[in-house]
Length: 254
Image (cartoon, rainbow, N blue to C red):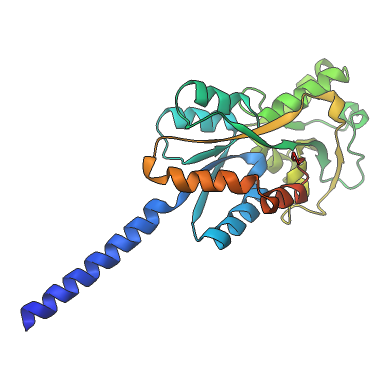
C-alpha cells in the first residue's frame, strides 16, 4: 500500500515537473530593437491571449542583438529596426528564411523642455549643449538621425553637442533625465503610454532620411520552438498585429 502511494506521488511530481519544463521550453524569447520595446508589450500580450504562448522580450540595439545571436544567445525570433542586420543573420545561416519587413519606423525630435520648440533650428541655439541620438554604428535610428542632420547641413555644426546612446532606449533616458536638452528618438516611444504627453516632439520629414524598413526573422538556434516563433511572425502581419503597430506610429503594408 505504501509502495503504491509512493509510486503515485512520484508519477504526479514527475508529470508536474515535465509540464512546467515543457511550458518553460515553449516560451518564446524575442530579441527586439529598442524602438519596439513599448509596442512589443502590446503585441506579446495580444499574441499570448490568442495562443496561450508565453513571451519574453530582450531589448537592445539591433547591432548588439545581432552580435549576441551570432555568439549563440538563445533567442527564437529577432525583431529588428532595419533590414541590414536580419539580412546579415540570414546570409550567415542563423535564420530559417529571408527577413520580412513588418513595419516602417518614424523619427522624431523630442525634448522635455516645454518652452523649447523641437525643430532643427533649435539645435543650433547657444543654450542647447547636449543633443541625444542613438549610436549610428549599432542603431538604425541613429543612422536616420545622422542622415537627417547631414541633409539639413547641420551635422558638422552641432557635432560637438552630440551624445550617443547605445540604443534608442538609452537615448530616451538622456532626454527624459534632462542629461540632453533635446534629441532624436522613435515616434513609437513618444506615443507609448509610458511617455505620452511628456515634453514636446515633432516628426522629422521622411525625405530627410532613408526609409526605416524594420525586419523580422525567425532564428534557427532552438529547433524545438520554431513553430511558435513562426506563429509570432505571422501574428505581426495579421490585422491585429498591424493595428497595434499603427497605434504606435508605424506604417505597415496593406
